[in-house]
Amino acid sequence: MKKQRPAARKFFLTLVRDPRVSQLLDESLATTKRWETERQNWGSTGLRSNDEVAQLHEAAAMTRCEYNPLVRYRLTTHVRCSMKETFEMPMDHCDECDQVRPGFGFVNLASEDSGPGRSLCSECYNRWYMEGAGLPELETVYFEPVVRCDSLGREHTFHFVVHMSTGLGIKAFECVEGGPGGYQFSVMEPPETPVRDAHAKLVAKIEAGLAVRYLRSSDFPGAGASQNRLYAKGTAVNGRIDERDGTPMVVIDGREYSWEEFGKFLSCFNGFDFRLECFDACESREITPDPARPNPIWWLPELEHSAPDDDRHH
Image (cartoon, rainbow, N blue to C red; front, side):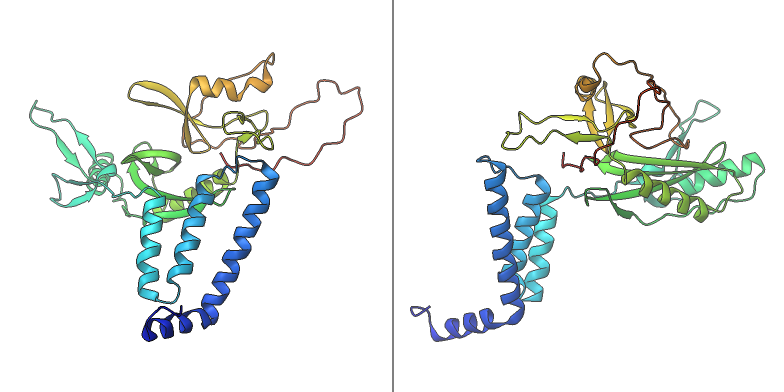
C-alpha cells in the first residue's frame, strides 16, 4: 500500500472501508474456512461438484466487483455464461405466414400432388389442423421459458411447444447441445381446453417431477470419484427411453445414461425380479421412488425405518 500512488491508495482505502465490501470479504473468509473444514473431513482428495465450483467462482467475482455495479454486471454475466451451458433458440421460416418462428414448433406437411412440402410454424399448423377438423381456432401461445429448481437446487429452463393432434398437447423440454433433451414433460388435454389452463397443469407437472430423484451416490467418505457409484434410490425408477446417434440410452433425473450404466444402477437389486412398463409421455403415473407394495413377510413384525438418505450431487 505504501508503494502505491496517493490516488490509488485513497481509492483502495475507500474500497476496503465500504461496509458492503467488508461484509463480502467476511462472508468469503467464512466460506473458505468452511470448505477447508469440509475438505479435511472428506479426505485428502477435496473433490468438489461442478455446482460448488461454479458458486466459488461466482462468489469470488462478486467480491471483486461489488463496489462497481457496472463491473459487477459484466463479471457476473461472464461467470454465469462460462460455468453454465448457453443456448440460443434455433429459428425457422414458416411457408404459410412468412414469419420467422422458434424452430422446435415446426411441422413438415407433405404435398398431395408430389410437389414440395410445406414447413409450418406451430401457430399455422394448429390453425390448419383445427380448420380441417371443423373445430374453433386454437389460441397458439408462445410461452416464455420457465425456470424451476430440482431437489438439489439446480436450475432448469424449460421451453414450450403447443401442438394440436388428437387433443391439445403441450410439451416442455430443456435444451441440450442445441436440441430438446434433459428433463421433458408433456400434457394432453381435450381440444376445447384453454391453452393457458393446460400450460398451468404442465408447469405443476414439471415442479412435481423435479422434486423427485431416482438415483443417489454412494459418497463414501474420503473416496475418489472412481470409487463412488450411483444406485437406484428406491425400488422404482422413472425415466425416458431415448437415443443419441443411433445408440439407445435412458434419461434419468434429467441426465443421459447408457443401458449398461442403467444396469449398474440396479446392481443393488441383483437377484430380484422386475417389471418394465412403458407410458406415453403425457400420461399421469406414479412418480415416487418407493411405491407402496404388500409386505411379502407380513407375519413378521415390521422393522423401524431409518431416516431417508439425503439427496447427493451426481
